[in-house]
Amino acid sequence: MANTIRTFFATTRPTTLQATTLPALRRSGSTPASTMLPKKAFKTGSTAPEPPAPGVLRLISSRFCPYAHRTRLVLAAKGIDYETVNVCLKDRPEWFFAINPLAKVPTLQHDGKVVYESLVCNEYLDRVFPGRKLLPEEPLEKARIGMLQAIWDAKTQPNFMKVNMSKGEEQLKAFVALKEGLTLFENHLVTSGTPFFGGDQPGFLDYSIWPWFELRDLLLVNDVVKLQEVEFPKLFAWLSAMYDRPEVKTVAFDLDVFAKYVATAIAGNPDSDIGLGDSD
Ligand SMILES: N[C@@H](CCC(=O)N[C@@H](CS)C(=O)NCC(=O)O)C(=O)O
Image 1: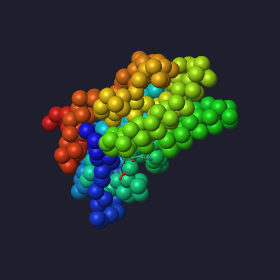
Image 2: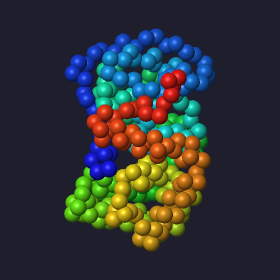
Image 3: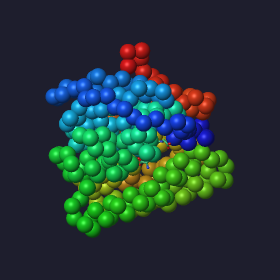
Image 4: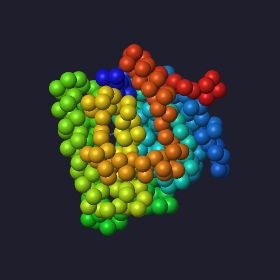
């Protein structure tokens, strides 16, 4: 399973970048728009879907992307209605580059506005939509979340990937580094005395780190690099508490399908539509 997760991000950049001519709006009112869009991924050469109707929030996504998963979690936590357009990461549609110059998921479209980068998307959703606030207002508390997020991005998440993609000495080194990063998260829970990084309920950071924990059995694939509860008791309690959350259940990855996707990726032909039926 080494060398696997890298392929989740494999992309082939289209050689030609066509100007996008988006067709006129096709919907109005409160039609549950997601029912009108295919679950299958749009690929290079596809016609762009019509833009979302006024007031409809669209998530441009990929079923197996942990960054898009961050945003799915926030959407579920805040109970926000949205529609999904899936894109193929290997053969991204040309029209996607005209919406987001990086052509990365997640990307949001909302009333003519475009927002991309998972953390930016999540803050946008938190600020613009009603419901439970996920980021603290208090400046120091917000700064603490931001600093832990920086640790996650610099030290922790990359080592989850390195452990997955390496072997032998290199893998063990990455595993030690991963555990050093995770210790800072463990310590935070010890100090805060709360079950979640967001307090009594999950907040911004809980959702932005969760996807890698949900995927950990696919990422940390042998017994030598398994996380042990005895080393991270608070983090393990946090894991159980997160699994109990309805928003986590609602958008949970199907790990069997995910593993099949990984197998197609290892074989060099990641199948974004794996597990979907003909009518999807
Ligand atoms: N920093 C970005 C990373 C998003 C990202 O890398 N998404 C991957 C899919 S999991 C992607 O769109 N890859 C396309 C590419 O890198 O070209 C974020 O937080 O949203």
